[in-house]
Amino acid sequence: MSEVILKNLTKKYGTNTVVDNINLKAENGKLVSILGPSGCGKTTTLRMIAGFEKPDSGEIFFDGRTVGTLPINKRNIGMVFQSYALFPHMTVEQNVSYGLEQRKVAPEQIKIWVNEALSLVHMEEYAKRKPKQLSGGQQQRVALARALVINPDVLLLDECLSALDKKLRVEMQVELRKILENTGVTTFFVTHDQEEAMTLSDIIVVMNNGKIEQCGTPFDIYERPATRFTAGFLGKANFFEGKVISSENNLVTINTKTGNITIPALNAKIDENILYIVRPEKIRFVSEGGIKGKIEHVTYSGNISLCSVNCGSQTIICEIQNTISGERAKKGDNVFIDWDCSESVKILGGD
Amino acid sequence: MNTDKRQAITFPAIITLFVFAVFPLLIMLFNSFQNDDGTVGFTISNYLKFFSKTTYLKLTGRTIFNSLIVTIISLIISYPLAYIMAKKLKGLKNIVMVLIIIPFFTNQLVRVYSWLIFLQDGGILESILNSTGILNGPIGILYTKTAVIIGLVHAFFPYMVITIYMALERMDNSLIEVSASLGASAFTTFTKVIFPISMPGVISGIMLVFVPCLGSFVEPRILGGVNGTVIGTVIEDQFFEIYGWNFGAAIAFILLAMVLISMAAISKLGKRYDI
Image (cartoon, rainbow over all chains, first blue to last red; front, side):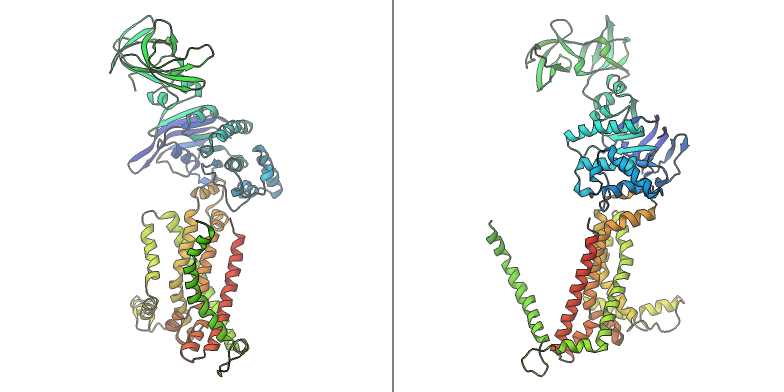
């Protein structure tokens, strides 16, 4: 395990810059998720850390040593692929011992470590099986054991849960978190699934178009998004963008493209170009005051309902908890909506 | 559709197969147990004749040896070619594939006579070698075993390329990457991961080259001349030169037995690499 630093890392394919001058630091033992839509450069970043791709410029450090010139097989990384990439002609046991054999570990020691690794992922009974005799989840565990058994400096996981069905994926998330906490290895986890990133990570790195949009704890990323992209990519969000006309009593009036709207918010200066982001679940219905609107659409999904409220100049999405006493929102209802002014996240100058 | 109807569709194929393959084979089998004097009866003298003469046994040995050499050379040529096609080439792949398949679509005699013209004394190869100073004088390669082997390799190696290519193409590239990430050198990755996984392709390739080589007679005859005598040419002679059909049939069945035995052996080898 070690601290990983990416410094000014850039990768181009022809004229297309896939990874654009990114800087990133993963502290020892932390789980860092690289999150972004497909084509954002997250997998390329991971592959550069692994050594499968050569950066055009920039450096990668493991614990202060640069690894840029090290070939893949000397980097001491553990990698789990989306397809798991288990060797089909070897048993589970042979798969897991492969990395140790390359390190010329004594056979008796290999046996001990392989057993430890397999018991870590609860696959001891399957040691003699071939990969094709295992389910997706089981193959996943073996791939993880194979990557961990070599005691890597860095563990790299490439969308490794996305091939599993939803229920199994959620189970594996919890399990993976537990296993990684036990081993304490610095881990990079590439995913396009925001929920997965939230559940698993210490740090989330949001990438878009080869650049890092934001880097922070799941809480920071969700509650205090730094850009429109981050807010839109992780969860749902309402955007209020335009020039500030007035700001008093924690109420800010913004001149948006579709008209003026007054919302609860803090710290606005007159004439400033501004973007406020409000999460739908922060919004509540009130009996009076707040913003007046009409419910245009209700999507019921059990514990919550998602309401689109037309407030004249803009439609605001609200998430309402379906509590026992809570009155059900109906299409066509005239409502007042309000939220705490501190929940409006301010981004200067829009994007 | 019920099973009976489904089976009914296979009748034309079964009948064709019976009339044009099984029935002639049965006639041949019958012939191989007949005397040459025209009397009808049962004799194993044709088979005894084959096994009692060292010439024929030596010929069998030479046929097997030649086929082995052709198979090995084909493997050495085909594996790197298939690997480059499957893993390195992108757009060019199809063009290379077409170039490799062309011998398939060329008439066998045209192909063999092209080699004859190319290899003969005073031919193209000789003038190239002479003009570059590598060789001085006649080349003397035609009507040797080397010429036969060149002809056979050219005829059969595409099978090997295609089967190995398909096995490598199917293989997930991340297997190679994962092997490197676990600390394996490129050489270890090849011997421990790539080659074993491509083994089913190699085995089918061996089968598709070795087996037809055993029975080949056109290349040995035309390119090998007197030095090209193999079982295939002996059978041909029995049928078309000597009119010893009964003995010819017996040798043909001995060849068939060799083919079946080697196929069984190769596929048994393949079972070991079953993934």
